[in-house]
Length: 418
Image 1 (cartoon, helix red, strand yellow):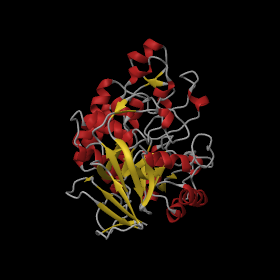
Image 2 (cartoon, helix red, strand yellow; image 1 turned 30 degrees about the horizontal axis):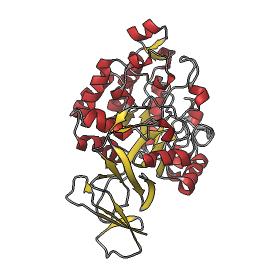
Image 3 (cartoon, rainbow, N blue to C red; image 1 turned 45 degrees about the horizontal axis):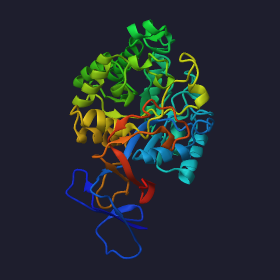
Image 4 (tube, one colour; image 1 turned 180 degrees about the horizontal axis):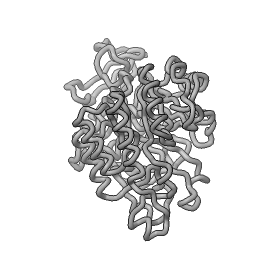
């Protein structure tokens, strides 16, 4: 199949057209009736986005999301590569589950799916998982996401063992002994009568992980950082040369704990939404490069799991279709970061950290790209989302950065129909 994408602005290039044949970018070819021509009407082409942290729920929780619906949503959000977390049922802690995920993604997926394996068997925090066999099957990292790596002893074993296979450890930093709550511990939680989770629950584990990484000389990745002290510690560690990388999510730079006052469980996250000073610290961390990546932590839940009492509702929101518009609207258009920094955080850095080899728009590279309308405001409508669950707090938000076209490996995976 031949595709010509024309009348566009190619990110960081003077090109106004892209030529695709089969699954690669190619040099200009002669236009005939066999060529599919896409006029982008002056909109901007970016390399396909890379999400190093999302939940596709399959196998086991297909009532929330499937690999098909999750990757359809990813494609609508401009993603061509996503990394799926292992807290499925069964847990992705062995090669058989990895093979099943990759087979399903190849058959039904709308973007590249890179499974992340569990650190411990069943994510139980006791025995190491079969990392070597999972690496052979296709995992790109290990984590017990949804849970913190239970002890410092296990963390050390996981880091040393995984490093033998070139696998990065990604840790959900939350001290379970301090995390029996529903939202951030603050004046707001007290005023509305909800038990809070203190920010130190996250900070303690971030500090532990940094110390262990520095001691062993082995890299570690901190998932969904949300606190000002977490940002500070990571910044200081990087200055010392510690091999630490990190991500945050759009909800941590667009929302705060005051959004919980109406008990809307679409604002219930884990880690929880923090205070304004934490939000500002997250933005500063993105601006100065302390925070490497913007991940979605896309976490679909059935309506019955969210439309209940705040304290009983499941944690998390869907985020694949809102990540770029939120980053562009709240960070780039407000001059908090540059467009180049946003693309670094959503493409180049996650690809580099996990060694995925994604992000090139040059001839010979895989034809993975997305086209965004940066100029026209749109109202986000959750009823039009392609993911199976609709648990988002952003319904009705006015945003910039609507997806016009997404192509993965020369295959059109999403197209906005006017």
